[in-house]
Image (cartoon, rainbow, N blue to C red; front, side, top):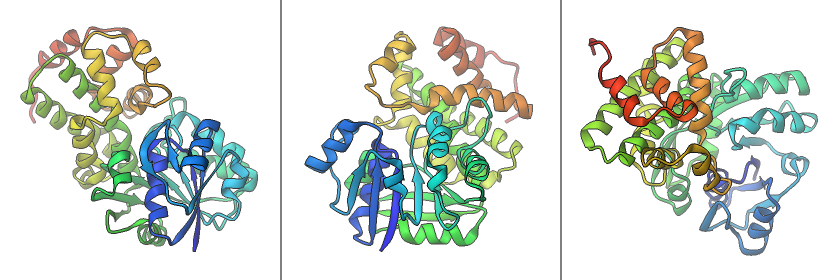
Length: 336
């Protein structure tokens, strides 16, 4: 029986724990920062604050101690918000072991360094724990609630380590959760991170009561600029047509469960970002922070990302969404 530590008990971390726990083949420790989450799961087998109504299998135990969570673990799955990744791995570093296998399931880019999550983890583990981790990234179209319900879901595990990807594929798959392998970890991570920016833009369109034509154009051109950025960072073009690229982008831009799209809808209706975030009750819309990092990475790579640039102006400069759309639509003509 594999021992798996899941670090982060938001909706997605809880859903992953449910997937792993329902097979009966794993012993899972779910680490939660919030004491009320620990109490809810321990007493009622449900994460009421973040994933109400979804029962957590008995094979999943919850803890507020990082050391307890990773003690004896063969797999460490990181599912914390991206801006907490570095400091949590620094705290875990003294207890991490070279034989552990690491799975990053966080979709984001670190703001200050512009590093992907697997790069952040690798850097911290090398510097603080003294070894190079075997690491992979899990991404794809996967709303937490639907995964927890057992709706058929397909997702990708990416790693430069083929054997590791194969192991994670085998251990994490079940009849409702199909895992594909991929060797393009940069493409899978960047697709999963930057699509959240485009999803906010899709929400803005809905908030402005714009139609299907607009959203279809946004998704298509959004994919084009995500692909430009990813390829400039060494990713493979084909990855962007897969689950972690197009698949995740379509889901997040059109699905009502998308927190990023929801933020965009409220922006389109004229609400202020601070007010929207305050009303999310601890839930994280990764695209808000990722917009900063994506703009910074695009500048570094000399990569044109007009939609992302306009989203930055809306989110952080208070630009009216209608003005941003007008600028996008009146740019000089291009060849597709």
